[in-house]
Image 1 (cartoon, rainbow, N blue to C red):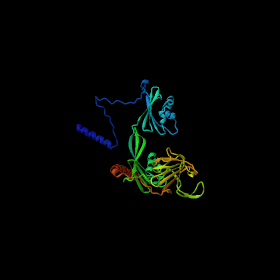
Image 2: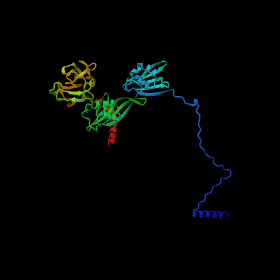
Image 3: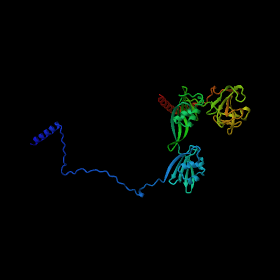
Image 4: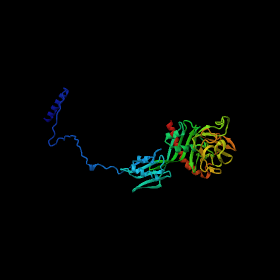
Length: 414
């Protein structure tokens, strides 16, 4: 009978479905089972008592750089130090060591009283100024600097420094690149768009932050399709096969300038007559540093007619160099003084027959003026034979890094 009833019920449901009628039914809960609870949302305000408010910090730490043209009180105020303490701190001799660009770290209490001030001096020392009662005490100790190696590369679009800026390379490293390859590449006349360079250099870090650039360890420069490589070893730079990149004479007595008058015939700017110009004139601002192009002894230093203030250096063999129209001589430059390559000779001026500030430079061989741009400058000594194994071992790692940089640079260009 139960089976028969189930069949009848199923047949009735099928008949209703076929006729388009849908039936709904509710099922009563089983006895003994409680229905689910209803859920409602409510928002209640929770009172916060004064004793529950978290107190502000007792002190905070802030870092600021000493800006160009800024006063010491201005920097201290930016660090959050109160006016009364600024006046006291500004009188400390230790803070007179601050220079433009230096980073100062201050620990200041909530009422504007400094607890400590720290900054890295130019002597690789950490200067710390500590609050000591009603006074301040300065303590200097060796800075825990960490040396790291950085690798970067770039492409010349307009100038070397524009390219180094774009690559995030410090100016000090750019200057070293120009000095290293300055005997082979004239960075004013020879640069071309698309020239490439790669450099491996040291950086000094303090608490994880770069604070100073160090020496270039290796570099590569491709100029007009010709590639030059340099590796630092001992006290100089060498090619990968051990030849010295340092020339006996630098190409220019100024690190960076433009040539205003070349070697050869020209119309004299004062006498207005055509004559042979037996030197190179470099236009540069008054006071620009003039360097010795090679090791030598001062043969003459003083005023000399149309040359104005002039220095004549005698080098090895039959070479002499002349530096004229100087505003002043470098300290210690006098007859008989010895100067090493790149040491200062004097400073650009406008003395003698000069219509504007510039350096007149002559390179003489056997007493006869020669064009330094057309001469093949002799190189310094190569790596000594007994040092070649150590040099090759050191150079191998640097060359591998340069090749890695060069390949990544080419991949970016493609």
